[in-house]
Length: 330
Ligand code: NDP
Image 1 (cartoon, rainbow, N blue to C red):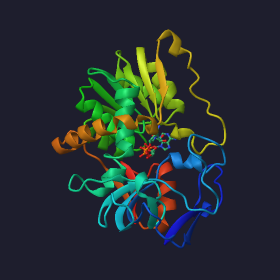
Image 2 (image 1 turned 135 degrees about the vertical axis):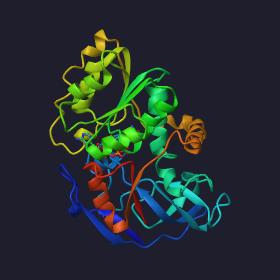
Image 3 (image 1 turned 180 degrees about the vertical axis):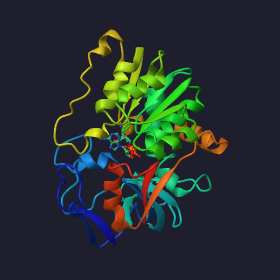
C-alpha cells in the first residue's frame, strides 16, 4: 500500500520536502484486526506539533515512518467478530491508502445518517471539540455573546452554529479572507470580520459593542486572545482550544500581554483536549444529528484528491486554504 512518511522535521512552515510518498507491505491480519480501505483522511493543525521532536500531549511522529491521524474507510477483510466486510469505521491510522487496525480501536460509522466524510468532521472529532468546548468547557448559557476565532474552519464553524442553535444573543466570528467572512454571515453568524483588515481588538470592539463578550472560543491564540481578554465581560469564560497563530513560529508568542485583566474581571480560562471529553460523545452525536437534520447546522468541506497530495493539503490547511473541514479523498 502507499503511505506518507515524515522525511525530515519542518522548521517553521512545513515544506513538501519534509514528506515522502512510500510503498509499504501490509502485515498479515492478527486475530481481532481489520483491513480497511481508506476513503478519506483528515489533516489537522495539531499534527504540526507532532512533527517537532518535543514531548507534548501526543507523541511526536517518527522520522521515516508513516504519519498517522483520523481516517474513515471500508472494512475489506476482518478477523474480528464485531465487524464484517463492508462495515465503515473511523480509526487513527490515516496517511495511508490501506490500514491494518485493531477492531477495538475503531469507531463504527452508522449507515444512512450522513456521508462518511462527515464522521471526520461535523459528526466526528471536530464536532465534538466544538460541542464540548463551548458547552462543557466554556459553560455556554442561553443569551451569551460568543466570539470564536478560526470561525470559517472546521471547529470554528461548528462552534458558531451550535451557539446560535442554543440561543446565543450574538455570535461573532473572525477569519482570514473576505470570502470566509461572507460565508460566516450565510451560516448565521451575527457579525464577522477579516482579521487582516485592521487590528483584531478594534474590529472585535465594534462587533461586540458596549456589552462586550461572555464567551471566547479560542482557536488562534496571540493577538486574538489578547483582544478577547480586553473585550470579555466580568465573569467571562474562555475555552482554550488551539493557538494556530503560533504553530509554525520559531519564536515565543508576544501576545497576550494583558493576561492580568483576568483577575479584575474574574475570568475563567480553561484549556481542554477533545480526548478528555469523550464522555459527551453520545449526547453530542444525538444533538448534532438533530441539528443537521433540521438545518440549524450545516458543514463545509474542502476536499483534496489523492494520497500524494496530502502533504500539500496539510501545508495549505495551515495557510488557511480550507473553508470548513480539510480532507483528503483517497
Ligand atoms: P481549521 O479548519 O480551523 O483550519 C485551520 C485554520 O486556521 C485555517 O483555515 C486558517 O483560517 C486559520 N489560521 C491559520 N493561521 C492563522 C493565523 N496566524 N491566525 C489566525 N488564523 C489562522 O482547523 P481545525 O478546525 O481542525 O482546528 C482549529 C483549531 O482547533 C486549531 O487551533 C486546532 O489545533 C484546534 N483543535 C484543538 C482540539 C483540542 O482537542 N483542543 C481538537 C481539534 C482542533 P483563516 O483563513 O481564517 O486564517
